[in-house]
Length: 471
Ligand code: NAD
Image (tube, rainbow, N blue to C red; front, side, top):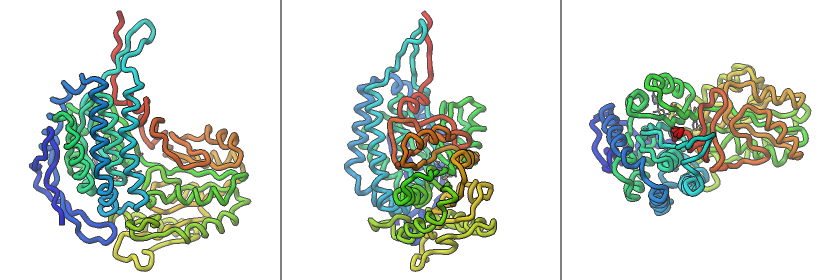
């Protein structure tokens, strides 16, 4: 059993002043893996003070210096690739496939940041004036549990590119993953105070970050409900905010799609990261005339979807992160049944032989209309709703009839037609005939899926403040 009893402040592993412990429980077996000692508001203020002091010098570093730090960070994580994969599987219950992709995503964060530094100009001319893009200040980074080190790398790499210093609050459930990445970054030799990480609860450490006047910007990934609370608090000190929130992403299969290609891709989009993904394509919009064909194909694909031990390379759906998340998903399956939707495959309860972990059956509902709660609310588990449409216009209307707007998907054999449909969707990112990631293109949501963008130049500029010299 492991005890994580250190946080990271001013370049050192220190014992938090907080005295409360949180148990780390295996999602796969529900056995106790260890415990983490949580930080308190005082620890958070110490971390913010260290970041504030470091900002004075770090904000003045050259592009070359920042590139070197980013290279060192990349090298330090590459050395421990296998440990990252193992701990993501053990602590989070992420599948082997997810954990491997997640490591690649972490690595890519540094590669993309270096590319940005090599190409971005921090001084521009606009009108008659010189425009200076300057680091915004101390950034508070608050993240969820569903890709913990991926978020740390993405946000931290951008902050360093910009010349900002940071205080990070990961989920308390990710403490072992956090410990590993801290060991790497300590080895990378960042200047003292540039990186500070405080383990702790949202309403304690997260709340202090949101209210503290020395935090200039918050970069938050998490639920829409918590995002709203953070935004309300942040406005008191006029913090800049980037919010990456929830989603209920539509996946439009047009009538001319190759269904034997589009349906397996739709299942993969719905069940990625065991369904615990903000970008999961959880509303599958299919032509009414093709419903029977879709049902047969979906049943076939889902019945072959392997649920089980996340360590196995062929497992596609692992356990939910904790009992609470398992209960939440079960509750939504019950809501779907009560609303009159029909379970095509899956349903309530745990798959046979997997009773000890937080495993849920990959579930598909048909007879769903877009007003049902299972079609409107983010479930964050492997539950897919099939909704039928009659015309392309109706498909677009249903797709956009949501409070969210993070991601959408379109499939058609006619690429031009797919692009035309994609261009009418209220979503920050639309996957056209593929499932991909572009680390240099902006990512973020329309409507209640967030504010601002991450990645690429647009993402970088969310960490910069504009100063104009009129001369
Ligand atoms: P959450 O919103 O409950 O928590 C996210 C983080 O906020 C955690 O670190 C938590 O401790 C902290 N927090 C909680 N209350 C707080 C408060 N009052 N003040 C400050 N911080 C507080 O989300 P979760 O359950 O950890 O993660 C799942 C959610 O995250 C889903 O809604 C999902 O859609 C969203 N998400 C969004 C993206 C995206 O990029 N848009 C990516 C992944 C997850």
